[in-house]
Amino acid sequence: DAGVIQSPRHEVTEMGQEVTLRCKPISGHDYLFWYRQTMMRGLELLIYFNNNVPIDDSGMPEDRFSAKMPNASFSTLKIQPSEPRDSAVYFCASRPGQGAMGTEAFFGQGTRLTVV
Amino acid sequence: RKEVEQDPGPFNVPEGATVAFNCTYSNSASQSFFWYRQDCRKEPKLLMSVYSSGNEDGRFTAQLNRASQYISLLIRDSKLSDSATYLCVAGNTPLVFGKGTRLSVIA
Image 1 (cartoon, each protein chain N blue to C red):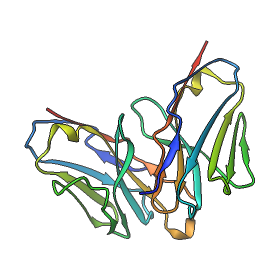
Image 2 (cartoon, each protein chain N blue to C red):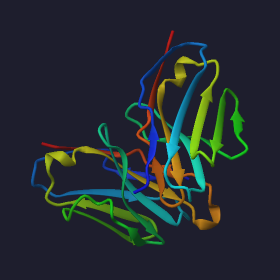
Image 3 (cartoon, helix red, strand yellow):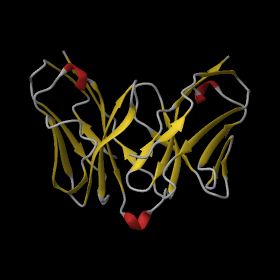
Image 4 (cartoon, one colour):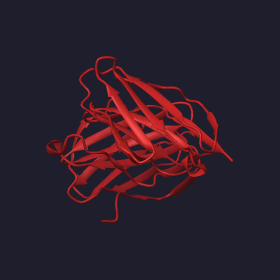
């Protein structure tokens, strides 16, 4: 398995532009998580899905952020409009279902977003 | 959201030293515990799971104290290659990550 795949790896955009981050989870994993990492706040959970259904989006900072999971093999995180304070590394992770309690989450390589 | 707290460091230790990291978690219902390692500009990767009975993997030993809600990681005979940030993790779904403890092993 290729692991969790994220694209793009790096994104530099101007303030006000729309940004779309993409994630392909590990096949067969029921859970998909979007995290954001900054030096100040560490790794923060933004939203997670179970079987393509959003379960908890309380970590999404504001309405400018939205996430979708149209099928089991693809998810997007969109920021519109982007702001400089959104600059961070965004990680997608996946994990097997509840039957595999105690198993770890597997991370993609992340998208480093810079908003100028 | 419930939190995981750990000393940010940095810990600067000479090669061969023994170093210990600790963390506490606030959600008493947590059932899954891990230590992850994150290298600079890379994604977090699992170092080891943590069990109530304690577990060892080579030079690494992890302990869990459920009563105190406390997790530890001991690294013996530190190597230069151990230099990284170590993330303490607790929870169920979702997992909650600490901010990490930075370790630098110096020759």
